[in-house]
Image (cartoon, rainbow, N blue to C red; front, side, top):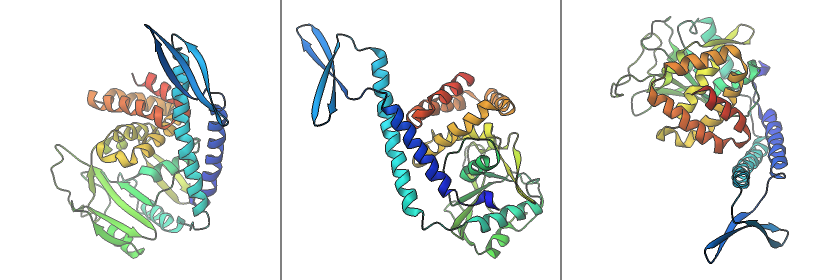
Length: 331
């Protein structure tokens, strides 16, 4: 199953291209900082910057042109993104000789879920593995991400086919573990498998064992968005994966990026949302889904999405056009 093998080489190519694009754009932007000097009642503004070993100062005038301010802000955003890109390149190069193929446990899990018809029971692959599957099987622009976590979403109440998922994973060599809230996860084979379900009401209800599949899911808010109009991808011969529609994925990622509990993952959430959103905007069917979902959202959810798009402008500066298009679409 070549299409699920690790994407290290693709990631290196992407980051090199990203580095070149950012560097080319930076070469066209002014650099330096604006300094102001007040003489009498008049304030004069200057652009101060380094040129070789020297510091240069150019006179701007009594007013600062708005376009200059905007271009200087863009430079700051791009310089931050360039540092992140080079950090990513450094990390990938250091790991290049250490990577191992994680295909086999994933192949076995997806094949079994297909054969046992658990996709028909409503299970979905979500999270970063969902995003990676999009990139492999949809005409979506590549953005390299790596994860060892496989997140499986389960509908509640569960009315699907019975299958001992916990026993099956233990048979593959995974160890069964528990979080403090009683939900379970499985670790082993250099992977972690987690089960997630919708949190209802005030979030105080305890998680419960789903006897039919022998797992206790972690309860999370907003995951019900991902059940709206999901799609099924043909991953390989005899192997399928049910995943959220890219439209639902985009809106879900934008919402959870604003949550305090997700601060450590905010950048990854926003990047995935923007790159998935770019595909959604170019695909009529997905764009229609995006609009239908958006119009069904309560006002607090819409506020979260709009806040996330404003944050994304700093996280993904090269995708300003996509972000603006999403903002116009989601009015």
